Structure formats: structure tokens, C-alpha cells
Amino acid sequence: MAPRQQQKAGLRVLIAGESWVTHSIHQKGFDSFTTTEYVEAVEWLRAALEGGGIAVDYQPAHVAARSFPATPRALAGYNCVILSDIGANTLLLHPDTFVRSRPLPNRLAAIREYVRAGGGLVMVGGYLSFQGIEAKARYHTVRRSRPPCRSRSTGTTTASKCRRASSHRWSMAATQSSRASRAGGR
Image (cartoon, rainbow, N blue to C red):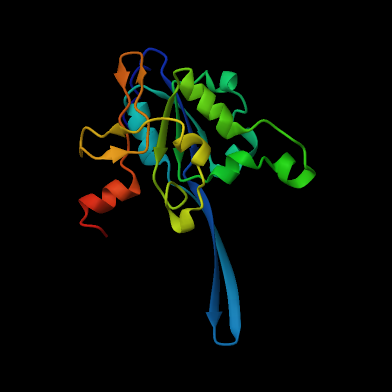
């Protein structure tokens, strides 16, 4: 592994999501058994950012449920927040809210205010992003509050917001719909 480059002018990114648990039921006639696997698929993204000299903090989805920053001020320590294949309920339903009915700040509203104050936001497509499986991501609060921008590589309009962080231009990952249209609608 090559040594990491010097960090670019203190750029720091928070990645939330890009992890999951797969629980399978195997039915063999009358008999059945289960298997469970935990997966993190952040390495390609983390390696690309760190290879470019950007500091990365990573919260798998189950960690983000409890530990994702709750205020715009807490998010302000990051130049960009990347939500990758993580549904809105993970950020809306903190475990203390879900289990103990304890009211806590709306973390999607915190993201919205963070972006309005100049923070960067990238929403990477996945099963639980944008339309995904049964459109379960439910990011209406975040998506409706800012204009789309155009991808330089594909010329298609995406749902993510482009921002400048110092002199570094954030590249946007194509959403599933953009990928599908480039792949002939699959």
C-alpha cells in the first residue's frame, strides 16, 4: 500500500452508510437454516478520498443511527457530508427516540441548515437512496430544499448539490438513474 498523500488544506469529509447486514433464510424442503453477514463497502470511496489527501471519518449505518452529528454546528467541522446507501429513517429515528420516545433534534434539518450555511452534501445512489427499493430512503426534507446541478462527466442532471470546498471541486457520484440511463435503461 502506498503512503497516503499529505492532507489537502485540512479538507475533511464525513461518510455515513455504505454498510449493511444480510440475513438469509435457506429453505430446503421441510428444513431451514439462517445465515447472517455484515458488509462494509466504503473502501473504494475512502481510498479515493484519502488518496487525494482528504481526511475521512466513516460511520457505518448502524453507528450513524446513534452517532451522526445532530446539529449544523456539529456538522460544520466537515467540508462535505456524504450519505451513501443510507435511508432517512436511520438519521430521523435515533435509537433513544425509537426505543425510549426521547425527542432529539431532526438530523435531516441539521443537514439542510449545514448546506444552507455553505457545507457540501453528496448523496450517493444505492438500494436505500433516491428511488431505490420501494423508494424507502425518504429524503424529502433534504432533496426539495436545494437545486440540482449538472454532472460534468455525463451532462445529466443529478440530485446532489455541487459545492466548492476551498479550491477543491467536489466530484459527484452518478445516481442510480443516471447510471441506468447510460447503461441503456437497465
